Figure (cartoon, rainbow, N blue to C red):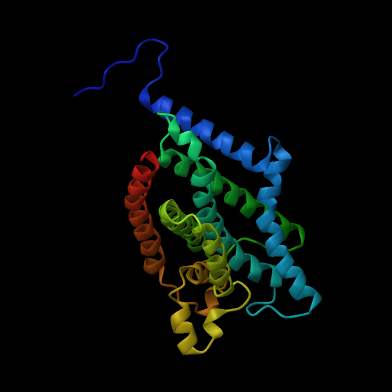
Length: 264
């Protein structure tokens, strides 16, 4: 059945939806970062500060990089994809709590709130990556990987995993609001065991076997393999992508029950 024509001056359903999504993204940025460009800049720079604090600590202690001869490049290639994943998975969960009153408007659905926050976090992560690359260039480090396509796929996998875990988190906090604190603690464990500050493949085989079940560690090694192809880093690409897609599918199914609970 063909779609009904819209009256002159009346927006189509797609235009109306994009308008709602755009408004949610703007509101999201202004309420979280302050109604100024500087406020948003702080959030973009925050993961960059995290990366370069690691570099500064190892530089002052005069510790060599576990792989290669460039500390900045080693830590950046491991930390950036892991932080992209963690920021998306955490902020998507927080979006539902912060913007729950908006879902009382008939034009705004819970999925719209989630999608708007995902888009904001993707843009923020991309800008943070550009800042890190710019700083690396400024200090004389070449940020271009030996295998650019592998690195790009690694960052895309970080986004997929962040969206997947984020939707699971949305469903969990719908029933257990205290999970926000629980996930913050769990994120620390994931980060420490992800290999940002060391090379997991140098661990004993028995330890490394169990560490590979951590998808965040696989992300760090995925991007590092693009910069250090000679290191022979083994990455289970299918495991990471399927883990993220499976979590996203399960999370979206569970979100329906969260919507029913909110409406009830």
